Length: 186
Image (cartoon, rainbow, N blue to C red; front, side, top):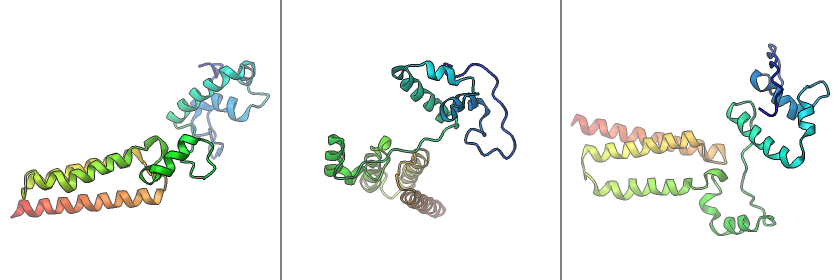
């Protein structure tokens, strides 16, 4: 890529605590961005780029490094301050923040997903296959799908809130599975 000179990346030594030591493939790129030392042969290419080209390349590189687990990027949170500079975000948080501020900004829609799940569990399943094994099995499938989605997306800003949500879905799934077993036995 444009950030690496093609030189072989050094292997990390045992006990090496540098942030890039776990991923030898990204050492040259990481060193060019994070360390920028004089002896690094990649620094020259970074210094020759103008700012207009550097920022997009840096963003692409950060995305690639995050995907390769060489770089950890902290999640962005909602700006809940009253003096928020972004007028659109401030108005949205004031009017509808109770629906989405518990979730990460990239997964703002998760409350809609949760409301649909609750609507299916509380309303739709009551009228479909009333009193049958299929009704309980459908509830179990909906709950299991919600549990898998929650575990894969990790949508909550607050880790404890996310853990409580996962725990409640597990309890609901176990309850429905137990109910399904009892219905099947009788």
